[in-house]
Length: 220
Picture 1 (tube, helix red, strand yellow):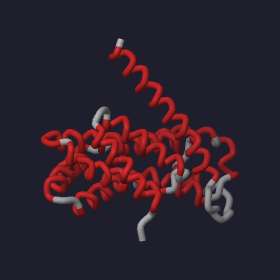
Picture 2 (cartoon, helix red, strand yellow):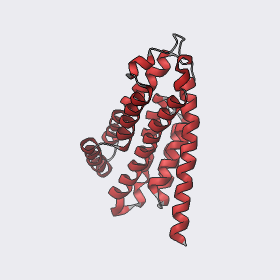
Picture 3 (cartoon, one colour):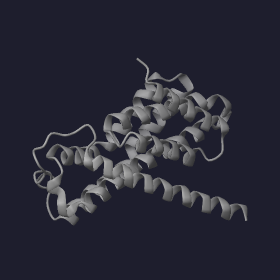
């Protein structure tokens, strides 16, 4: 059963690639906006990543010999968006450092686990899209997947740094931090995810502002 929201995202990503311009920034912003709408739910994040990459592949028809470069830029945008989710989660936990007991254990454990598995989720999703793509796109995506696996991703680096920073800031191992939470059942929209989504919106605005300043600088 198709998801209308995800199919719309595929179409939006396709149009971005067909239009050309700064594909990296445009797809980063598109992905960030989708993450923000879904309140950083992990399952939705994977669907969003898959949809944006699918759309980028569909838009390759008008890129000609630049297909590899365009896909590389598209993936860089998605990767940067994922890295921003790790930063947002870290900041949300840091801001709540003095009242972590207010959050559910499952809430905290999920936040930490989502950061630990962020890079693998991205790589797995990329591989899935590659396996389902047509010949040329499949070859390019598989090559980019292998490169990302060998060298690491922005998402993986950001998640690792965020986890290390949290342990240092909180002065405890993260499983000990999670244990301070309550036994309350995890609601459909966790407090922590809501807080992180709000912060992510601010990160997106900041990145968009920087992009506009850089663009104006080049035009002057």
